[in-house]
Image 1 (cartoon, helix red, strand yellow):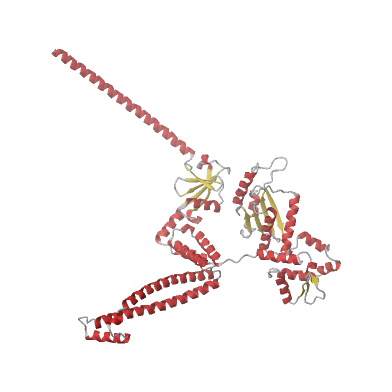
Image 2: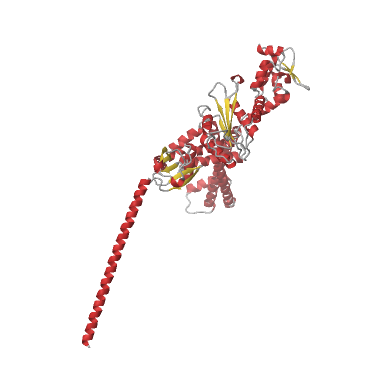
Length: 584
């Protein structure tokens, strides 16, 4: 099973995995195997990796379908791959676990389909003859819908089973009008939106079309019209309509601007995940969020609409700047006139003759003949200042909006290699402190160990004596958040195809992680070999023995000292008693 998955997912055969897809599992040989193993063993009483029995048939664990196309079919790898995907859906439904790949290494394009024997909801898939025939019929139906002649039908037609002798002879000599019209209809199906649209295109190119109970067409130079359903299988009105609808459904939907920018944001975040701490990355992601938010709030669906809004923003900025300049000048003028009136009519002293002359001219030009004429100036200036502040705030917001719209237009125009350029520019703008952190991450080594025997070793028994180095890399290479150990381990699991019982050591510390089904457990003492552990144990026993002997010696000395003190005390007591008796 593992060999089959590795073979069909060979990058050399699938244009570097360009034509490889999966349903309800990963598009990776090892991970797909683990996904299918989990589902199979959940519903089956057998093990997914159990060997074949010596006698009889083994348990069916997966179905392998090969769907081939002739070079004469003139189909593209994209079409072949879509047909394979559609076949799996119609044959097994949306709950099947399947890997679908299109191989391009032969003259004929062909699909490999590997399907788990159990669906994700526990339905057992059978490998009976009736299922094989059903798969062939569904494959033929899908091909006919796309204008591809199934191999058996093509064989029958070449024998002339469905044609008159005259038509068969014309087809052999390549002079058949029916074949020519059929090929022309095949070329128009990707261009039309419905049958009526297809017929109008034919009329525009010189064909005569008669609509009625049956549709008949007459090609330029043809003597007699022919009904569509007489052209062969796949050319009746209903079949052509169905083929057009299928072709429309297969066409990739054009992404909206919002979807494009969400995709750009995801790609940039992924490419800069290992330097997510950098200020440049945070600023760029913040700008991208503003771009997406503006696209969503303004309901901008096309780049033309964005350009139009950008022009409107530029025009609005010009208008606001002009209005702010004019209002600022008017406020300044009122303030000058009010100050001149205060000096001229208020008899301010000292008041020079030159200043009085200048103030008189200002008041004359302003039409002010008394101090009462400027009594309302202060309120007007206050209101104008409030309006000026509001306009300046609006200008700042409009400039920010214009900058975001401009960045959207620039990004869209350069979107093919935008991420590459942006990531490169972001890395070049790292600060010295950020560059130092990158160097530390590049020097922080990750070592993956695998069991020497190739067999799984229980987590409790994992020891460096039974392991060998499988792979080495550094934290920086994984494009993971360097501060998130779980993300580092998960990225390592996906990118380096870790197996169960593999052990990962991150950095130079003694903490290591045991891998099992995509989960990780921290284990201790892995790096300490059993011999070293035994030496440490012996040393510990010897140390305990020395401590025990020292403790016994200390206790013995203490007891000896206490005994001597007791003897001396008893001797002193007897001496005192003798002295007392002698005195009496």
